[in-house]
Each structure stands twice: as structure tokens, then as C-alpha cells.
Amino acid sequence: METELSRTLGIEHAIFGFTPFPAVAAALSRAGCFGVLGAVRYTAPDDLARDLDWMQEHTDGRPYGLDVVMPAKKVEGVTEADVEAMIPEGHRAYVRSVLAQHGVPELAEGEASGWRITGWMEEVARRQLDVAFDYPVKLLANALGSPPPDVVARAHEHGVLVAALAGSARHARRHAEAGIDIVVAQGYEAGGHTGEIASMVLTPEVVEAVSPLPVLAAGGIGSGEQIAAGLALGAQGVWLGSLWLTTTEADLHSRALTAKLLAAGSGDTVRSRALTGKPARQLRTEWTDAWEDPAGPGPLPMPLQGLLVAEAVSRIQKYEVDPLLGTPVGQIVGRMNSERSVRQVVDELTRGFEKAVDRINRVAGRNR
Image (cartoon, rainbow, N blue to C red; front, top):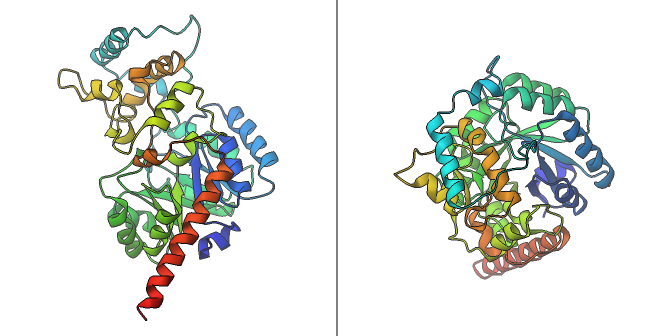
């Protein structure tokens, strides 16, 4: 499953796997793919350094990358405390009422929230990059579009390729103008922050818009046949995230959440602003329903919503409150119905890809 991009990066399969779990990212790289570690949860540089040290020891010298969440425009002097002060008390009261309705216990006294979306803040993301560039990272991806120009330049000085996610051809053209090396065309079906255009439509539009830059197809891809479709549409690889959540190397810290993912169908997700303030596809739960309720205050814009719900999400996860328990995940969740190792999933993807290519070759041969 080689393309020009996979050969440039020295990987066997043109599969780029995004994950918040170092063990999954390392397993992907060892399997001949390209593991990309999500950095948004690392608010302390030492924690990121610890896990990159671990990656170094467990990737067998294979390449890997890092995904950050960084705004394109530089904002000076804005702290987390400044943002916290912008959250209306009415929204805080609404969060308390939803948790009380479901009997969600408080965190123990002195116990800090283990879940805070602060990696979006430029000061945090830049600290992550200070750490990352001390390691042989081969790719820097940004989930909020093109990073600031100085970050792109710094990455290139270190020989690091830069990728950015795009939900439309217009976004993709902006990335190309900003000097981005790889565009990830992320369709409506994808988990997490995603746009409104389906992958089958989006991928060829982006390929045409930014040619000759390489494009990765993302969203609704969880089989070898779907990978073949993405490459047939002009992509030079695929970007997969949701598929790895139910692998044995993933560390969701919740058997109840794993069970919900394994039981979910492709229609059990919703594109909601409940988690971060931006539309993000996730499991539909009574938590997402609460933020769609006309009687409620509605979600705040990013980044206020993420800070508002941080402690609530920690409590829901810690106590495994099933009606509220969810996670970002794409529509491909309908295929995620068994726990397997990363290697087993990759092997299945490559077999499916080979079968799809054989079918197309037979069709093409008959039509000569």
C-alpha cells in the first residue's frame, strides 16, 4: 500500500493513525504505518517528554508524528484564568443541574480534573512544540487549520513536514498558501471536529484544489476497501482515528465506554458542540442531548465550552455514568465491534485493500 508520500516518509503502508495513546501510536509505526500522537491532553511539558521518551523506545526506529491543536492567529497575553472568567454563571449552573439530575458524584476533595482541553491555547501548544522538536518527529499536524507562520517555518527548519486538516476545498487552498506540506481532507463522517462535506465529495475536491500537494483522505474510513476508494479519489494515504479506540493497546480507562463503542452502530453518533464549543462528532448521549435542549443555555464557543465542561466530563468518566458517558468517534464506529490489537486491525486493512484492488483490476481487465 505504497504511495509517493509513504515512500518519502519511509513507511510500508500509507496509513496515518491519529491517537491520544502512545501505545497505539507506537504499535502503528511498528506495523509499518505512521503513528501520530495527539498532544491536546498534555498540559505539562514533562508529561509529553515522558511519553515521547517512551515512543522512542517502542517504535523500533520507525517514524512517527505529533498532532497539536493550535490557532492560526497568534493571541498575546491570554491566560486560562482570563478565559475562565468569561464563562457565564448561568452555564455553570446548567452543568451542575445536569450532573445532579443524573446523580453524578463530586470529585474527592483536592482531586483535580483529569480532563481539560487547554492544548488549544497557544501558550500550551508552543510549550508542546518546544518539547517535540527535541525528538525525531517527522510530521507535525494541526487540528485547527494552518499553524502560525513561525511554527511552520520552525518545523521546516527541523526537517519536519506540516499537515493541516481541512473540511472544504477553500480551507485546503488556505493551507497550501500557508506553506503546509500535507492536507488532510476530513469528511463529515469523521470523529472529532469535522465539517459538513462528506468524504466521497470532499477528497477529490481537495486533491484538485491543492495539487500537487499530497492529500490524506479522512472520515468514514475503517476498511481496506475504503482505503482503496480514498486512493482512487486521488489521496496519497488515509488518516484514521476512531478505528483505534477499541484496540487492545488503547487506554480509555473505562470498560463501560469501551462497551458502548463496541455496541454502537453507525447511526449512534452526533455532530455536537457539547464538548468543545465547535461541532465535533461523538457518541450521542444524554449529555449531548442536554446541550441541544432548547430549554438550556446552549453551548459556548470554543474555547469556553471545553473549560466549562472539563470537571463534569472528568466526573462522568470517573464514575462511569452510562447515560452521559461518551467520546469523540466517527460514524465508522459501526464497524468497531470487537477488541483487536493494532497489528490485527492493520492486517485486516491490508487484506481488504488487496481484495479491492484485485476486484478493480478484474473490472478494468474486462473493459479493455
